[in-house]
Length: 525
Image (cartoon, rainbow, N blue to C red; front, side, top):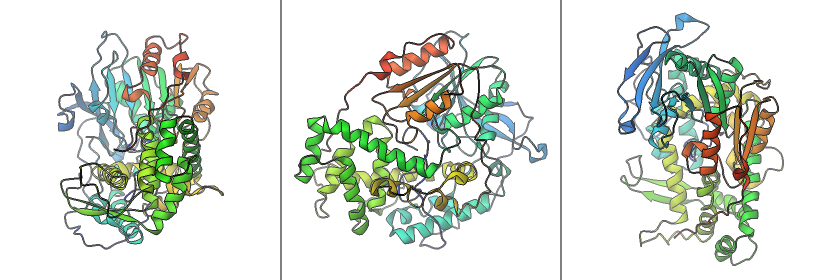
């Protein structure tokens, strides 16, 4: 949920690459929007399409060894009069031979900045070309929405009806301003895909590979559909096809993964003990407990105070934690198999919550953890152009497919989806422009990676896409969640990807991916 809960987009790495739990919008509030400047066009770009303009790397990328550039591309490939823009690209040198073909890397979202991955990506033999989406990163187009960022503390404080009203009004004002920017108007998956091809050509790569994670796989599939020269193979990590109903997808994914994790928990005495200790009842499940907690916290929310020094909002506020916030944070924790092991402890802590029992010993209570995750996720999004890039793409392309949660959806999944994508998109008022739903067909070698515990891009999506890719190899990591290779913590998947990039048409040894590895459940201290 943008504003009150994590931005649950089909993105990776916990920012979110999934569909928003939404807050519709309104004017008003005890904050000053005077510092929101009237519309100014994106930073001017001189030069012709295909020009490469050297840039100073942003401060956060200092020390990563990256080369930072803008690649000049057309804003609208059907209308040269729309002008040009600079797509930001961070290039991390490889550790192998200079002759190795580079790897274009696409972050999720929509709204994920691939260049941000330079902060945590392991060095690898192939050079990694991190290509940003429009409106994020350090490109010439910046879709930051100060209209939403400035009142974010008031939004996080609630109460819900007032918070939704403020957030909805903020997004509407942001949309009205950004619609005067041609770069925003022409932001789409098709444009992102064309930018990728143009970037790799401009940088002079005559042979290259492509890696996409989460929404990055949606872009990668459209690159494959266009079949640019030089593309030698593709890695799709957490496959997110264009034909999905986002509301149904999110609801079904939330319920499936928490049921799967319940099975793992029942088989592990340590996990079972965490839940039983909080409830005094043997056999309690995470799905059952969260289904009880969501309506309970919606009826009786709690407030968690933060000082200006405790969050990146840099101002004091009392965060509201209601049932929808609980559901949104639990769903976000499910993305990663490591953070998913915190869920029993979080739910147990919420079950035992006492308003007067704030920890005095420096430990973090479950309510404090939930409030902090929700606040920091919103803050990270609010200080970038991610929400606007998300809206430009998702409201045009995915909204026509959205149908709200299916009948019979349980309390947890229903709270995660909320009012559905339609509620988020209403204030943005973006015209529908669906992607082609015809499957992408290609004879390129393709490696598809899925995590069994992925709540947003389950293995079935990769299987669906692979049916039309005769040179596809699909692996399912039995113990992992969403976005596996990009973070470099799975040596098995890392080795398979390296083998694929070295010889994309050769047979791959993928047996290690299906090995069971027990989850290590972690009680809160």
